[in-house]
Every structure is written in C-alpha cells, then in structure tokens.
Picture (cartoon, rainbow, N blue to C red):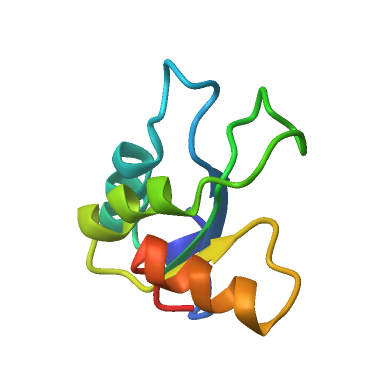
Length: 94
C-alpha cells in the first residue's frame, strides 16, 4: 500500500532470516520488489542472533543475486576497511 500511496520511494531493511534454518531474505526481497519496493538493506545476521556473533556479509550475496534492486549491506561495518570487505563479500551496491 505504501508503494502506491504517494510517489515517494519505499525501501526495506531486513535481516538474513529468522534463524540459520530459515534464511529467507532472498525470497522476501523478491516479494518486496514485486510490490514496488525500490531499495533493500540487508543486515548480515538473523533475527535470533540479535547482535551476537559476526555479521555474515557473504550470505547477503544471495539476496543481491535474487533481485535487480540496489542492495545495501549492513552490520559490523566500522571503518573503510570493513566496508570494503562487506561490499566485496556481499556483492552489494553500498
């Protein structure tokens, strides 16, 4: 409904999935794209991880490859070096 409501771009931020057994970000990204979302941000952890462990930037690549939308990788990016690693591993646009 938001995508059709007023001419402003709608973006979506999500995690990789609920837990390691349910990594559904690529599927959710495809649904969002079909509904008119124009950009995605994917945090490299699951919902069950909260902020423990390390963000899995490589796992974001599945979402990047699933849609033609711009995808931003998120999580544990603290400086230029970690940003460059996150981009390289994920294939994200930013």
